[in-house]
Length: 208
Length: 196
Image 1 (cartoon, chains in turn red, brown):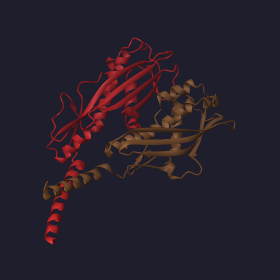
Image 2 (cartoon, one colour; image 1 turned 45 degrees about the horizontal axis):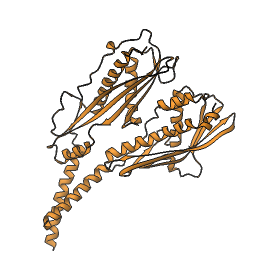
Image 3 (spheres, chains in turn brown, green; image 1 turned 90 degrees about the vertical axis):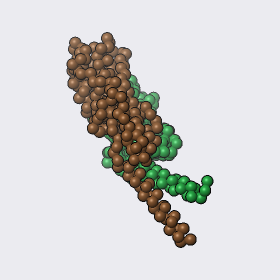
Image 4 (cartoon, chains in turn purple, blue; image 1 turned 120 degrees about the vertical axis):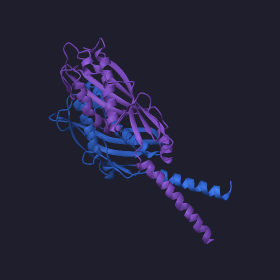
């Protein structure tokens, strides 16, 4: 009986060690590599069609996850977004309070999952010590809505982007650009997708 | 299935459970992000015809447990407000942010909006998560109370069994309840009349 118990105990310990190794792999491996999709590229501010007399604008920015406000990521990106809008040359100045003339620019960046089974993929990759690679993708929808001075109707432009995360031995996705980390990926994605939407806005005949 | 393979599958279950425990739990101290002006609430406030108002004290309602104001628990993570660890003050900042963005915040105004947090709940259960925030708002004009009403904001959402997915989702949904509460206040005809 004791021999049987000892054999079972050794078996449990071996399996527990394997499980702990897998946990460590999942928790500490850091084997994820982030790529910014290559389809949406940055449009330089110099290429925007500038209005004859740029006016001031009130900027409202929010980052959403699946359509719900994500206040923490909004905090991380709001300075970058404000600087990009300020440097666009499309407005005389940018404020978070109402401005003379009442012009309002709303920028919303919504993170939508492109692959809902990302966790399962990551779990399999971690559990197999990275031998089974996988790639998960996140989509980002940038919606820019502008209500100009004295205008009753607003103009809306939408641009899309994606960040791909490769885990384990997964190959780099298509023409995507490798980033140092997730922060750089998020900042690059935000800059590129906002520049695309602002460029579209600047080329709209009703934008003045 | 023989005994040894049965034993192995039990071990596999235990190992999976162990992994799940590690990955689904945590004990972090998390603060809500600072309130963000809502374009919908800005437009509602502007359309309401309200006069610039000041925002007074926001406190926990009398008789409510202090923990209602100080923290919520999201799968063993403790979530609190960045403003003196008070959700009542978080509601005040949410309202102030929207009114300021609408150009309708004036600290010198004799029209004062005050609030009492009456409820704050979150349940990020596996399957369907739910949350609820409630507050009583009052408006005084030249120290005379002209409005007193309680509003409740509730929501339900799909809640993953994976903590790494469910916890941030629950925090975002909970944060959005404050914005929803302000939206309900701005929609209320009696409130609109009180602040004109």
